[in-house]
Amino acid sequence: MTDSFRADVFRYAAQKYGAEPEYLWARFPDYAVFRHSDNRKWFGIVMDISLDKLDSSRSGTADVLNIKVDDLLLRDMLVQQEGYYYGYHIARGRWVSVLLDGTVPLDEIKDLIDLSFRATASGKKKQEFRPPKDWLIPSNPKYYDIIHAFDDTDTIDWKQGSGIKKGDVVYLYVGAPVSAIMYKCIVTAVDIPYDYQSGGLTIKALMTIRLLKRYPPEQFTFERLGAEFGIFAVRGPRGIPNSLREALG
Image (cartoon, rainbow, N blue to C red; front, side):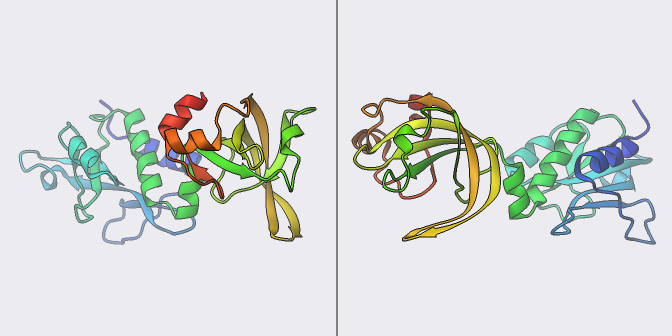
């Protein structure tokens, strides 16, 4: 086993998140804190401590990393494993102390840093790091000829919905008289500046979407969406149930 993964943790936090260690306590000169750049919350603390503070049967000192785990079930599962303890220095709560002496593999420690980063991130940053999501988006033929939008190209710009990011999948629901889902697309770009206002339609930003699949208008009709999948209105971007996602393929 290695003496300590301290330097590896510092390197990973700097390379992936641009976070440099901060030394906040004169009394504890080797305690290093990693913060988010926006909300300034800690997502990791490296400390050298006496092992008997974690386990009364152990002696000597070791470096530990404190990380935050939102899922209390996961926290309780982790502390059953060798090298993991309920958080030291920070009131137990959702924090876990991880030995950096090689007991816990470095790749596993990196995953825990990622987990803690997400758990302590601001709402905006969490949105950036969330996994891809599927959306159902309405389109009104009165404003845009969506029926023929993909006749000569597989990529178009579309009004960006709140919360949608690059890599998400959008299913375009075409309003009356079609009243059915017709297209599956992937979002390839977001936050394209745009200023449009006419009648009841206001557009402040566009996203670029690329066609992945077409559906015949009689396949996923408004009536079927309600009867089989519990969707009785498509007024704005919304998530879709797993059963519909599987049916759409």
